[in-house]
Structure formats: C-alpha cells, structure tokens
Image 1 (tube, rainbow, N blue to C red):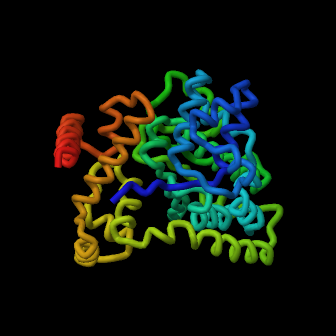
Image 2: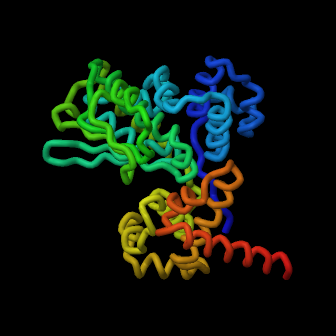
Image 3: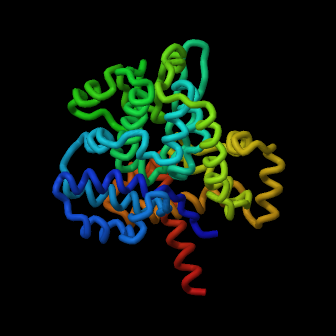
Length: 334
C-alpha cells in the first residue's frame, strides 16, 4: 500500500517562513522549493504534508549557515502560535496539566512526532520522537525542544530551567548556545529527544488558568483531533504509524508494537493477515518508502539512512536497498 504521509498544521511552516524571511530569504523561492501552496498559507489551521515541511527546512538550511538554526527559529514564537492547542495549554491549572494537554492533542499540531509525558516519583520526562525524515536534518528536533522549554517558561511566567535536556542529534563542536538556551545539562546522541522536569516544577500554576475555558477548549480540541487520520483505520496503517517513531532506536519488535496499539500479538498478526500483509512486510515497505523520501530530499549519507531506519549496520541497508531495486525492476518488466 502507498506510504500515507503524515500532516501538520500550516502554523508550523509559517513559523519557519517568518524566521527565514526576517533573515532575508525570498518568500517565493522558499515556497517553490518546498512545494507549499501560497493559498494554504492564509489559513494557519489548514494541513500540509510533512514532506513539504522537510523540504522547507532543507531550503532554509541551504541559505542559512547556522549550526544552531533550530534554537534560533524557536525564539520568537509563543504558545498562542500553537493555535487551539496553545490556548488549551494556556488556560490549564498548572504546567502539569498544560503539558498533558499537549500530549493529548499534539496530533492536531503535527502527526510527524509522538509526544509523551512519563511520570516518576520526583521527576517528569517529556519525550518527543520525530519522523525519521525530520530527525535526519537535526534542526527540526532542536527547534521542537526549544519551543517546549520556552513554552513552559511562558506558561508559568517564570525563568524555569529543566533538570536535563536530551537530544538525539550529534554533539556540536560548540555547545555554548545550547547551555545558554536550556540553562541545564544537555546530553547529545541520545535515544530520543527528552526534557526532564521536577514534579515540583510541574505543579507551577499558570497565571491565566481558567477551568471553564480550558474545559470548553478541550471539547473543541477533541472534535478537531477526531478527523485526523480517520481514514487510516486499517491495522496495516496503524502499525506503520507506530513503527516510524521507533525506527531510529533499532528494529522494532512485534511485541512492543502490539502493546503500543493495545492488542495482542496474535490479534495484530491476524488482522494484518486479513488485510493481506504481515508485520515483516509492513516494516519492509515502510523502510522502502522512507528511503525513497530521504534519497529524494537530499544527499543524506547512507550510514545515516541506515541508522534512521533501524538497521544494525549499513551493509544490511545496502542488501535491502538492492532487493527493493530488483523487485521494482521485476515489476516493471512484468
């Protein structure tokens, strides 16, 4: 089955466009390179495919030589720029409730990430897992982490500093900008992007808290979230969407994916079989489709693609890639 592109609100490319134009980049050229239609930009709550956002990032990176571009793009937008989700966060009782609302409604903002909030006795960890095509260019992930930290400070009206920030990107030569931005320990080359807060910090109140308004916005956000992915009801698609978030962490196993989808392994296998597929076939097709996307978008090193798709070593990726080419040639000849 064809690769079903995740989407996101126009609000997100608008943030990047505004920054790029402020830096002197040409609006029309960026739209042409990204494939973003001009008419869609008038509606911040319209949706665009992730591929367009990836192309926009690459177009900006070509023109702006800035190793900390993601941090800089995130410095101007505020919580209100998140639209409905941002306002639901703003009227929450405290930071804890605001971040849980973000986790609940994040697919309104973007289907290209998975945002979770994990509670522990003394800490709370926010995990942000990106689509491999975005992770490949580092800046979108670092922009997201910066937006989250700045949103927490804005929501609480404090100069709040997290306990720790973890980034899946390689360590830069100069880490000064990261330490100045996050004002805490920053670790690189981590399994996922994550921010650790103390439970005490999570209980900080939001000055604009309004329970009645937050409840009303919850209703609107729930309604807004329902249609997203409504046509993706097959088990095949559900597995694909669960898989891409785990690919950079190594080959996902069927037991973990079944648990994430709330079904038994036997049920998952049965439903995939009814749809004429299997777990290994879904994984292989997803890797093939994302490979096409990454190769089409730029000169991504093969070693990086191999890592992003969860292969243990580049040689395994090379074997799979040769097989995909042979299969394509066979289908073309038939």
